[in-house]
Length: 254
View (tube, rainbow, N blue to C red):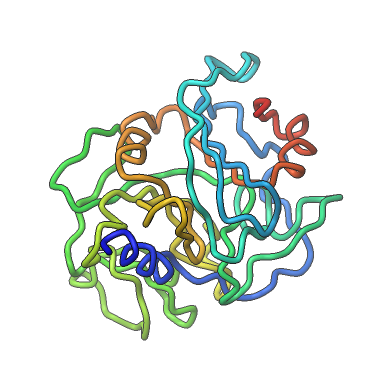
């Protein structure tokens, strides 16, 4: 019963991704920066798959080979599969690649390459080098595209509330026990999508509405492994896209 309830609640977790982005806009020619020495990968079978396999790789410098240090382990993504998001790879489909776009209400997790800047959770402290914030009932992630705080995680006690909707970062369930912020839509383009995280799953048969989720012990271990001085990144792609982009993005072989 508990697992079934968590699976149901997982479908209301994460943020919304709003409108179709048209043409591709490159944010950086160097999708995986030379100073990124830690990489979390999530590979799905195809654009519609909801199950994923995660791994962590590390390297000593930009010219060194990637070395597998964790994984693989199972996770889940959006109930609608995946679709191109906005991150280090740019906006919309990567040049010469196809695939769906992340849209409002489609239940897809954003595909592409994203920074992992910080973490959140229910505990007072966390064993992690990432910036960590304990959250309570006042912490929100704003998903109202008309708000000046859109796609921002904040303590509502410290700002003037100008939004009509926001996610609770301190939920009544276990799903946000640990959270890693995925820097999707970092420029906070209205209707571009908001509140995308790595968080606890509701079980292997569950799905999210835009996040990537996994079992709690594995997520806690991952948070403890990530090092901001290594500029960690998250890459989520279907298998065919991963294989095609691995040489250009300097990705490790799965």
